[in-house]
Length: 125
Length: 125
DNA sequence: ATCACGCATTGACAAACGTCGATGTCCTGG
DNA sequence: CCAGGACATCGACGTTTGTCAATGCGTGAT
Image 1 (tube, rainbow over the protein chains, first blue to last red):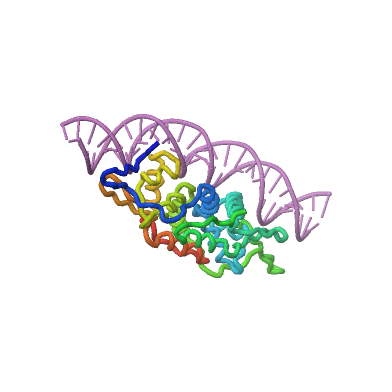
Image 2 (cartoon, protein in one colour):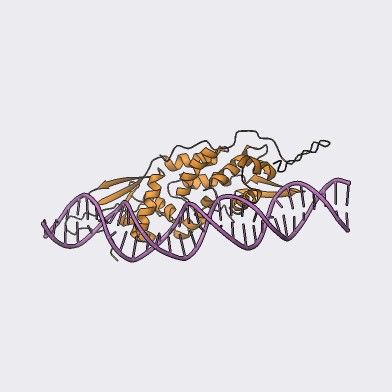
């Protein structure tokens, strides 16, 4: 141990400033990272944007597959990740599955990031 | 082709609503994802929080290694990713390397997310 | 009942990621 | 000049991730 921080007893010079507030705990960081990971992919960002761009912030899979240019199973895979993260909601009506933005989900995530010291976020499950 | 969207000529019923605004382009999604990926890791979130928790929003590596509990090369690796993403700045003074939050970087990232249709972000390089 | 269609699930595989130990580089003090 | 400390870089390893083809499951129409 004693890896670094050598406060010279004479000068009292250490390398660092003291803590002025509580940092993020390991558990909080893990749950926050789980939500951030959901949007850390270009395909999923485009999916969110595409859903938001549709009237009513709602779209079905058939309207997302073509503009993205990936296979249908891949689109379903990404949509599932976004739903599990609490960012999208799934509503199956008849043959079609409609995905919609969860109101406030992205906003509360953004609020956590912009605040200097992130609080735990309760978006995903 | 013709994967989905079968607007019945009689009923006119299709599955989806029309677009009401421009979605994110593939290139913009890729550059935005590069920044988001930088914070999509619990260790890096804790590092950002730790730096922010220090007086002056500045800290050296020796003060970050111990609370995180990972090896020094791993911490340096994560710090490099955060610097490359434009979220941290590195300032070597003497023997020590001080990392500080780039003012406004996290905020503009948060602004992109909360806005319904994300604009391209010019944070990383 | 049967068929076609929209979507989800599975299994497989290459690429990217996180972590470590070992080593290199630069600065400071003696 | 030499020794030691702070930090970066390198090489390696196991794990996770993104993608696809193939298949399964409901639903609605014939």
